[in-house]
Image 1 (cartoon, rainbow, N blue to C red):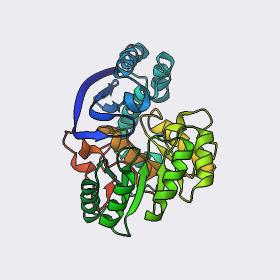
Image 2 (image 1 turned 90 degrees about the vertical axis):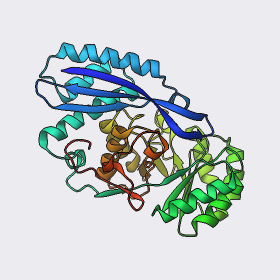
Image 3 (image 1 turned 180 degrees about the vertical axis):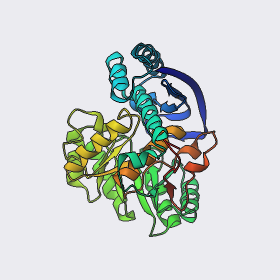
Image 4 (image 1 turned 30 degrees about the horizontal axis):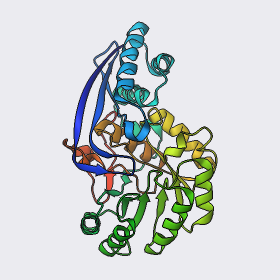
Length: 338
């Protein structure tokens, strides 16, 4: 088995403002995995240090170590053998995700089927997605929400914990109309009391949910128990026992942070066992990461809009197979990821 890696830096089309950083660019590691045949499996590592604390240097080193470990296995090694050898070398989810995706891509190409059809017999044909609005002023937020509604999106996610939250939420509701679902994402910007006050003040606008208003299992549970809006867990999901804690009404899962498709599906089953709703989002992944997440969401038959319509935020072409159509991304029909 031969593993090769190509690293590239991709700029955001405009600065993306979140409560944890202003993002100007990100690094993607495109991986190719080839065995004793001509089939190449493609994967992607997409660390985002301001968000997940994992540096490009850590992923670069892990992938280099994986290349050595994979080469030592011989050309016939596949599947779990390859993944276990990499994990034994460096147990880094963001890097392991690239290997896992490449293995699923190879499996799909070998069978001539899309990955979603390898995961389940009855995947969704298309995955509903939300539009992401990071504007910090009312006018821009309103314009973006109106545009999203006209494009067929049924849900818009507003980044909060930055700027005039109340004004932007009111403007978004007025521009998007009563039928548009408003989802807020604070990325843990608040402490408990501030979160409760803010959510209570914003709730009359009609909120679908608030994602990661605070960090930590106990804090999330307390906020959830005190506000009239559904609470979703994102970053807190990395804490030991968090996903199974029942501290949130919904759990947002990301392919990169879960070590790939295999890890995400296992975590989703754990979250659903607690009664929590599951939906997926990206860490501003490239096309391969988005494709993998779409296949996962289709296999899980996720009904809540997923945060996967993010490729347009990056300065790169959006593959036709991953274009958003009427508020959804059709599941790529080609063999493998897309």
